[in-house]
Length: 462
Image (tube, rainbow, N blue to C red; front, side, top):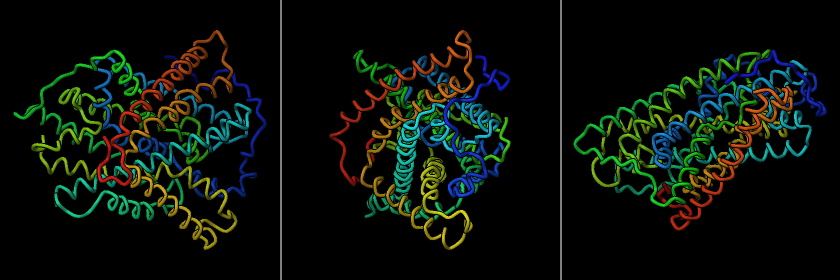
């Protein structure tokens, strides 16, 4: 695939310019505080890796379960190539706008400016908010489940319930949420990068151990017997993989870079996708090879079945759970930044300093309330994984697989006879179809699982 470069003819978008100059942004506390621009390319790499490489990679063997070896490898590779290409295109559009004097630091402003439509501003902010809040809720829920797993292994008949562990996680998130800027997460996200590598290697080692043990499960890679069920499972799996590769906050991550940003995001993406290559393929192959079509939606659960002994050393699996728990805090923080930026744009006074009493008190109150909101819904809806499948299909696919190609074609206006123009059109059309079918299959799964749902349940629906 030929990747477009900045040497291609550039034409400015016809949308009315938004107030992007630093002189106009002087009253914008969201830009000055939360999205302050001080980072280097490797900081962007840390942020990107945390936003993409998370515990959801432990779902990949389950995704392969609905696709099989061939289609599973194909889908994983295509999603990787398309998302890298998509994020690179978006970085080019952002760099072009910056050179034209309109530095965009928010996805919604970029879409509104390039497409010249006010409704796009609200469409993007709605989708972004749904995705980011959903991921924050999911991170708190999964972190609470990690605590519950560790507690149950120590005290199987203990009195504590899932909602209590979620409350503990929420309190920790309330404290961590007071880190004032996206850039201030750079060290947290570096640790997150190493944590993702650590628990991936632990899971791969555990799967190899399980596969070689005398208690190794029988391997069956057959797909659904019904053609309809097979197709629905395939599209659900494709939606899962798309959501795992999803990001939705590339402009906000690029906003943390110190200008000029030319070329920095490409280096950050290269770092991120190097980690993706190592973790995604190893987790998918090892988990699916050992468990086949019996793989759980979280491969750690397959390694620690409800009945019978663990299929790998308990101390090793416990260490993996701890690493997953720690990274979930970083993921929840990264995806909360858009909400914080929106809140501080409205509540903070940029003229009084980031740590002034005038700005500190509202920040503590609003961010704490946001985390309490996410924690409450995590406790109330412990089946949020099914809801997230629908949100992923309806949210990540438009933001990551369709809009970047549209924004590039609208900004750079490549010739209609060019390869770049048509590859972008094909990606948009194909993933519009995938998004619609993925939404249908995810809603179908939500309906089928409805009988298992119980508010404030002590068990997370698989």
